[in-house]
Image (cartoon, rainbow, N blue to C red; front, side):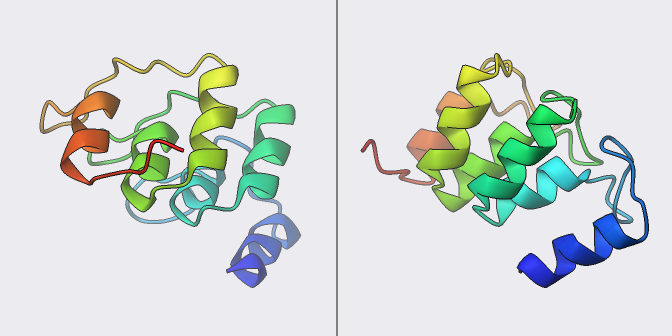
Length: 104
């Protein structure tokens, strides 16, 4: 997974620029890969925590679906909107309950 992030940075992908056809930014990719280090780096360089992809999902939705507590903690500490709905009307709380994300 880390190799794909390196490719993004080598080609000069902007911090909030969609990195794929689904409108996912590098922060989305870091969150859905559980890559807390890369997500932290993205946040420190000005990534939009609430940027939504073509499914209406922000990085916080992606982190919840993969059960990445580290990424969730970074996003919540960075003031990501926890009540943001995706295109299906699902919030972070719904995803955590539905996907059985561990609580600790």
